[in-house]
Amino acid sequence: MSAVLAQPLFSSKSFDIRPVDGALGAEVFGLDLRRPLSDDDFAVLHRAHLDHHLLIFRDMRITPTQQVAFSRRFGPLQIHVLRQFQLPTDPEILIISNIKENDQPIGLGDAGHFWHSDLSYKAIPSLGSMLHAQELPQEGGDTLFANQHTAWERLPLALQNKVINLYAEHSYLAKYAELQRRNPWRPNLTQAQIDEVKPVVQPVVRVHPETGRRALFVSEHFTTRIVGLAQAESDALLAELFDLSTRPEHVYRHQWQPHDMVFWDNRSLMHLAAGCPEDQRRKLYRTTIEGDRPF
Image (tube, rainbow, N blue to C red; front, top):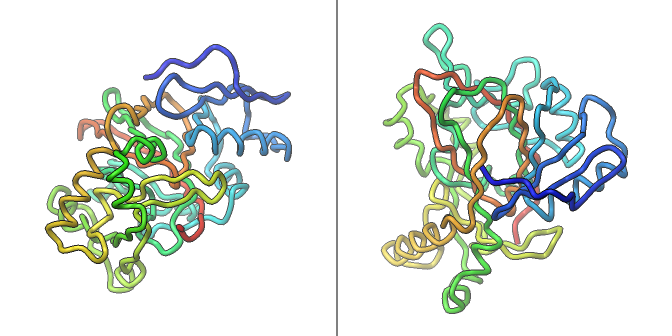
C-alpha cells in the first residue's frame, strides 16, 4: 500500500486530505460522515476528488442509509441491472459479496474481475462509485485503480493522433457468458434486463466535464470493438490500449482495512478486483452516482 504524505494538501476545520505517494488517490482524516456535512466542507471534498480521482475514508462507521445520503450529495444514484443483489432496506446499494446463504449468493461475487469503468455500457455512465467495507477476508481482496488521464498523456503521439477521434462500442454482455462459465452462480439475465443494457457507443478518449482533462475510456470488460475498423484491426488496437492503460506507473493498489470507504471517479479511473480465497468471506456495499454523456 502506498505511503501517505506527511503534509495535508487540502484541509478544513473538520478534516485533512493527504495524497498517497503514488499514481492517484488521497486519504481523508478526521471526517465523520455520521454528522451533517457543511457546504464548505463538501466543496473541499469535491475539489480533492477531482484532483486525486480517489478518496479513501478510513474507519467510516456509517449505516447504508448514511452512505446513500452522502452519495446523493454528488448527484442522482444509478441502480445496477442485477436488482436481485440490491440491499433490501436501501435498494440504491449493490451488495458486492462472495457470501452464500441457503446455497444462494447474497451479492455479486465476481464484480471487478476485469478492468473497467462502472456503467460505461450505459448511454449516461457513472460519475463515480463509493464502496464501503462490511466484511473483509484475512488475505487478498485488494482493489486496483488505474489513472486514465496519465495513461492518455503518456501514449505515443502517433497513437494519440490515431485514437483521439475514434468511438467504441461498450456492452454489459461482452464478458457475461465467460463470467458465468467461471462462476455458475452468476445469474441468468431476463429479457427485460438484457433490454436495459443494450450496447452503446462512447468516445475512445473522453474529456472530463469538470476538469477538461482527457482520459482513455475503453476497458477489457465492456469495450467490444472500435467503430469503423475491421475486427482484427480493432482487436489489435484495443489490446494495445488495454496494455498501456493499466501499466504499473498508472496504478494504485488499495489494501482494505476494516470499515474503509473509497470513492472513485469513473470518468478518470478504471478498477480491478484482485480476488481472494473462496473460503474467506467478503462483503462491501456500493453506491453509484450518475454522470453525464461522454464527449
